[in-house]
Length: 102
Image 1 (cartoon, helix red, strand yellow):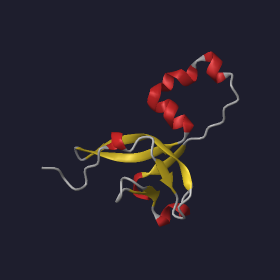
Image 2: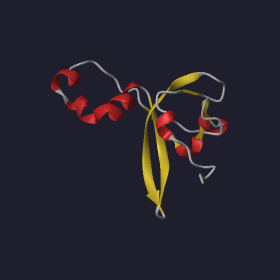
Image 3: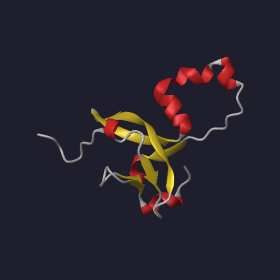
Image 4: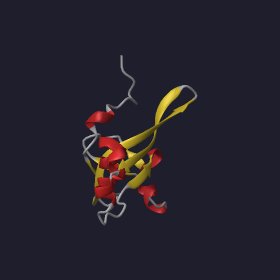
């Protein structure tokens, strides 16, 4: 028996995330977990190319030839409470997410 709050996170990776107006703000590439009272929860979601590098192996970003590239950080961090997961096929931010910086 599965809990209604359970989501297969691996199925969400690579999906586009939309803001409250429906504009794409990036792709979900990584997430950070935390343990609270013995339960594993999602602390935040990471969007963008840097988050993809983080998922594929953060150590690669420290290689000399990659550090020499003029890359600017493009990762967005979204707090768990600002992600609407009610429809896993259409990821979007909650309306109150616009009030806080990412």
